[in-house]
Image 1 (cartoon, rainbow, N blue to C red):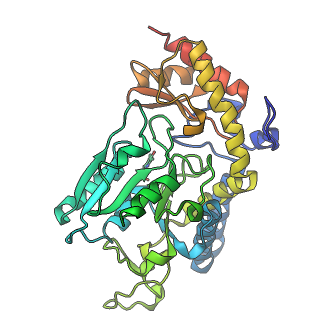
Image 2: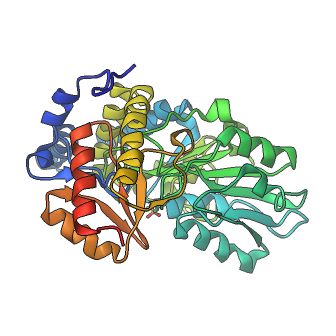
Image 3: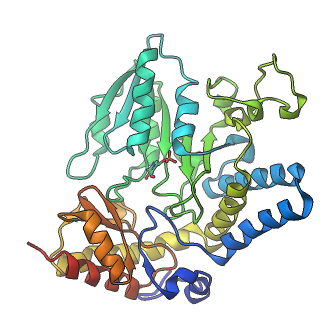
Length: 385
Ligand SMILES: Cc1ncc(COP(=O)(O)O)c(C=O)c1O
């Protein structure tokens, strides 16, 4: 267990591997994680391979496979249940286009807490017969019972974020899966705002699909995302977003043959984002090596400090103050969030502005001193009314 002021891993050693800490305090992990020496070295490995060999597709495709494996390790899945996409939008579309909406089960239950892109993908299915039912957000949260008015025996799928991008509120995945399955519906989870900070076990929770990109708490970059598909479902689903890497043998070059990989690779599409996969793997290795359970313990300390410190400074919290129902991402309501972000950066702290709030999103390498400095900077540039 962490002590009151230190996590139970070597935080100083990790901080030395994040050059940005020399000039700024990154508290914007809900938006973009900082570069580490590990992710930098991974990018260099790809560039060196490209430079040295001209091309090395065998090694590059193998690296993509290793990145899938690292993602599988993170969520307790097996590598053949993981597909590689370029974004969560693409992953959501891959699932959405594999579902038929022309029968009795045509309802999509989707929450108002989704990152807009997920809502957009489901709305785009309306022309194929999907009927959306929205689960409301109240006071920055969703009560589990709010799903009851929407989920019924006409529901094809429930689409829910694990963590709310606006304020870090988290939902109970096992409870969600149980509610969906009791009605015979599938459940799709966008875990972009939680992976890397909260332990997620797809087997224990029973979710059917789970997607995440890499640039936030997984310490990576844009252009790559991963999609988990529960093994029992894989062979029943044929996405219309597809391409040659979704085939049984991508290198057989049979233009008229649309066969489907027996693994979740059937959700892959075109040439994979290789350099992104190198970096993604290195970022996820950091998280898996530090250990998400240890990270969560430390982030509970930092999250509580943000809640208490915000209160002391008269800042207005958005959403719950119950750390057991949120990530460490803590949002405060401000007048002009973009201007506040710029002003905080000038004071050496990098927050993340989103609509009506400033988000302070620490990660495993942040200290209590970082959190205090971020709160001081916010209180200085956004004094309470
Ligand atoms: C919860 C969540 N889902 C999805 C996205 C974006 O997904 P995409 O990879 O499609 O840009 C974000 C933020 O950028 C997010 O916070």
